Amino acid sequence: MKERALGESKYSLYSLIRLNFDLMTGFSVVPLQWFSMAGIAISLMSAFFVVFLLVRRLFVGPEAEGLFTLFAIAFFLIGLTLFGIGLLGEYIGRIYLQVRHRPRYLIQAVLDKT
Image 1: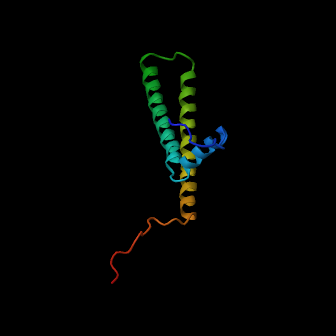
Image 2: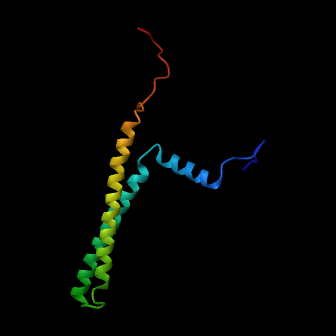
Image 3: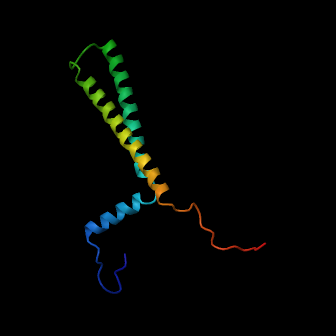
């Protein structure tokens, strides 16, 4: 990277991190949707884990006195929580987009006046 021609930056590390966060969340709701997708993925993986544990218990028998079952239930509830946070974020993000009153597009010039 090239050095600055004149002066020094007035942004501290904290200001740069805040600016990056504002840029990331100020124009889209995609980061909020990531939480929903992560929650769905974790819940689905935990559901597959529960099925695996049931099949294993039928064929192998009980082993760790329900420890892995507790893990599966905890992961499922964590996934539901993440999905709920993402869903709430999606609602808030859509409300924010409507409140800003930004037009969907701008007309730069009218070429033909009829």
